[in-house]
Image 1 (cartoon, rainbow, N blue to C red):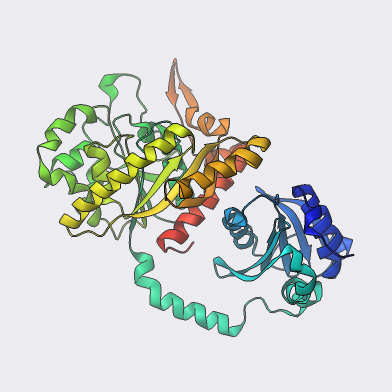
Image 2: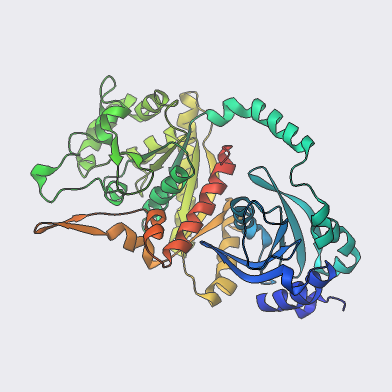
Length: 461
């Protein structure tokens, strides 16, 4: 039966008419060698096909070579789904992934801890290209393939030796937008947790007087002012003194927020009062740079949560950072603030030039607090995304953080000791291990974001 992409008007028809009725039979898969709507832990796959019969469904190192097939709505841009496919292939150790919206077909191959595009064609050309597709992912082709051949191993070893120094250098990332309420703290703390879970040594820095990151990571364990153990040991002291208060002096362990734990430099409400004094000290703008330099062999990644402003603390963060992520809910007010963000980046880069630092690298605008409503995602969200590049000329990250109640729920956990109730927040990754809810979906979104960040800053998983 020939395939007509015009008959695929939604995601369900891409699944049924392209994958089930055309591709799987053409590629030699029988009903006992492919599975639909596969759940493997927190991962949900549209289709998983095997070179040999797998009943019951088990996926491990001994499984026959397999291919993941993901179907998207015809109006969806496939670029927005590459990192999620990459996450599937690398997490499950699957060699090939097919990504399609009916109008376009792509095949990606897992290579080490990344993926590479090995085939691409339009849906209208699929019949003339079916032999090429079969060469990669037909059932018989997979049976004949060796997962990693000798030449790939040699290339990997050469790449590793050439990049060892670059891979080991500490990277600093600021999370900044001058508009509040866009999920900045949620992203900073859970991205740090996701990177830590991947084995990276992470330092999380809170430089906002609201101290939301400090609270979110569980460092505020006091009910009364006299119990405040952060007043005399926070980010202000690091910036105020050139000789004293190094990273190790103000760093606190976030023991229960995440597993593994995080190192956190806390903020404090007193930052507001201290800003006038710091503004009189020129060196305060570069002290975070200087003191982070002293611990570059201790950490792989530093995440800095910033204030929603263009004040001294925001400037200190962007001067210290190598990379910048701009969270945004993509709504009009947040978008209008992007012009101010761009102007602030220009100002910061001028200062960076003065102190001999290269310009900050913009990783992109990160869509955050995005509604999960299906009609919104189908019609409104693609338009919101296109505005970022077309009107504001800013790159857009591929990862998306959706608005789920679990993200605030996990940060508002408490513990009762006697008659007192103390905050006991958790990262969404840790929370996902304890409850069966949307926490697993959010945890996967941050895992995907962490993969994109690691790719962007040149660190392997």
